[in-house]
Length: 273
Image (cartoon, rainbow, N blue to C red; front, side, top):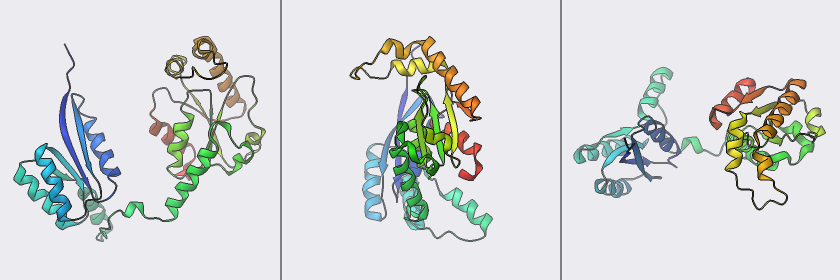
């Protein structure tokens, strides 16, 4: 039987960038595998005129309406107009804010875009991103002691995307490829500050990912050797042995998303939270 997908319109209205809303909408939609959302994102919506234009567009393609609008008057306006159109609408932040308010015993300031304020945390994340990009794939090996985390692993163990995800949380992350017969930088062994973590995966998983990697224009590239399971198995044995000798923890990323791998790394060193 053909596995057919149903499509529906998902309208996302935000008074800021819409990142929070997009994440929430996709997380909910992912639970309904037979239906796929057609996303319509409306960021920086902050007055009635803008909302009226958005609602006119929604009326042309009806669907579920999710919004993050901190101005209560504008939020009420959206709810009223959606009821008139016969469409469901949810203020995604309101239940969360109400819980915070009840527990903390104080009203929220309802400040638009408060999570994007240019504070110390913001600049810490930018600094971490710059450091991480400068130290990708074994670059700048002399200052690993400035890192919070150093990831090591053979090719195709998600070192770079995991590093970038951690950097977005303000964690300075370097990553180094493990290549049998090639010594790791001496600066890594001298570093006392960073958490050093080895990333591994199953032989089949790495072979599959490598086969999908386009490296045909790389000088001297041998695809058969690169994807050979016996070769990969030897690379993994070498990586595991290297980590074992140095008491570096190992994380198997085979069935983990980047987010799950990052969470496991943070859990290894609580002070990174």
